[in-house]
Image 1 (cartoon, rainbow, N blue to C red):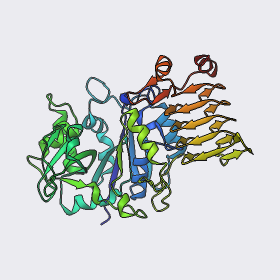
Image 2 (cartoon, rainbow, N blue to C red):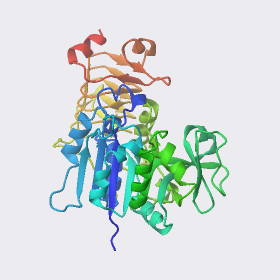
Image 3 (cartoon, rainbow, N blue to C red):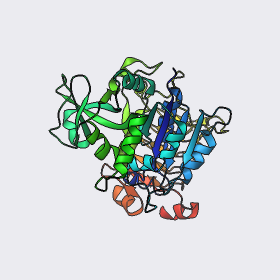
Image 4 (cartoon, one colour):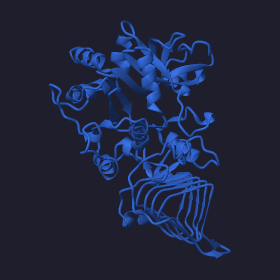
Amino acid sequence: MRLRVLGIVLAGGKGTRLYPLTKERAKPAVPFGGKYRIIDFVLSNFINSGINSIYVLTQFRSQSLLQHLNEGWQFGGLLKNQFIIPVPAQMRSPGETWYQGTADAIYQNINLIEQADPHVVAIFGADHIYRMNITGMIEFHENQKAAATVAAIPVERKHASEFGVIETDSNGRILDFHEKRPDAPTIPGNPEHVFASMGNYVFSTRVLLRELHDDAANERSTHDFGRDILPAMVKRSEVYAYDFAENKIPGEPAENSGYWRDVGTIDAYYEANMDLRAVAPALNLYNRQWPLRTSGFPDPPAKFTFDMEGRRGVAIDSVVSGGCIMSGGTVRNSVLARGVKVHTGALVEDSIILDNCDIGRHAKIRRAILDKNIRIPEGATIGYDLEQDRKIHHVTETGIVVVEGLRSQVEIATLFV
C-alpha cells in the first residue's frame, strides 16, 4: 500500500526580528541566496521527497508570498493529489481571530485534512534554511509505529539555552521537552550535544485529529504544538525524535548532511547568505539530484563589462544572479540578486544586494544588506561610518547596515546628500 502523505507548511510568521526586511513581507517571502525565497527550501524538500499534496497556510503580510507562490509554485488540475495551494487565514475560531498558535492554525483548517484523508500529515515551518529528505523521517515514523515524530538537530550543549530541547531515551522516544534551559538533558551517549527541536512534525492522521479537537476544547491551552500538544502526548503516546544528522540527501557528500540555519535575525540571515560564497559551501545550490526550486524569470545572463585599469567589471568569491551587470565596478565576498547594476569605480564588499538595486559610480558599500529597488547615488558610502549610518538606516549590534526598501528613488537619493 502506498502511503498517502499530506504536507502542510506554516508560513504565517511575522518575522519581527528580521525587521526591516519583514516590514512589508512575511518572513517566508524574504529573499535569500540571490534568486530564492526562504519558503523555497521547505517546498523543495517536499517536492524532492515525492510529497506533492501541499497546503501553505499564510497570515501576516502575505501579498509578496502569495505572488511568489503564484509565479513559481502552483500546479495541479490533472491529478487531485498533486497541488500546492495557499490558504489564507480562515477566521474559523469562535472569536474569528488570527491563528493563536501552530496547533490552532491546523485546527482552523482541519477540514482540509479530513477531505484529503491521508495516512500521515507532515507539518513543517517555512522559516528555516535547510535541506531535508522528508522520506527518511516518514519511514522512521512508520517503523517506530509512532503517534508523532519531531525532527531534532544535535547542537552543542552550550547552546541549550537558545532552543527548545528534546529529552529522549536511547531509542529516540521523547521523554520531555525543555524550553531554553542551559542544564537541559543531553543526547544519550553524546554528553556534549542536546537535541533541539526543528519545529517540523509528522503525525499519524487519526492521532492528529483527536489531539487537535482535544486541544481546541482546552481553554488553558495556548494551542501550540511545541508548548501544549506534544508535551502532553509524550506522557501517553509513542512520540519519537528523528535525528536530522542521520538524514541523507541524494547527491550530497556525507560531510554536507545536517545543514540547518534559523535565520530569525538579521545577523543570522546575513551569515547564512555568506555561507554560499565558500568554494565548497555546506549548503550546495548546485546539486542537480536535489534542486532548489523557485519562480522562473526571463532574466538575461549576468554580464561583466570593460577591461581597463580602474574600470574593470569583476566579482570575486561572490554569488551573482541573472540580469546583473558589473559595469566597471568591483564586487567581493557578496551575494547579488537579480538585475543588480554596479557602475564604474563602485565597490561592494561583504554585502547582500537584493533585486534591481543600482550602485552608482564610485559608491562604496561594506557589510550591508540592500532591500529591493534601491538606487545608491554616485560617491555615496554605506558601512564605513556606522554612527552616520544609524541616523539613516537600521544597523545591527554587529555593524550590519540594512538599507530599507520600498522607498522612492528620490527619497533614497536625498538620504546621501
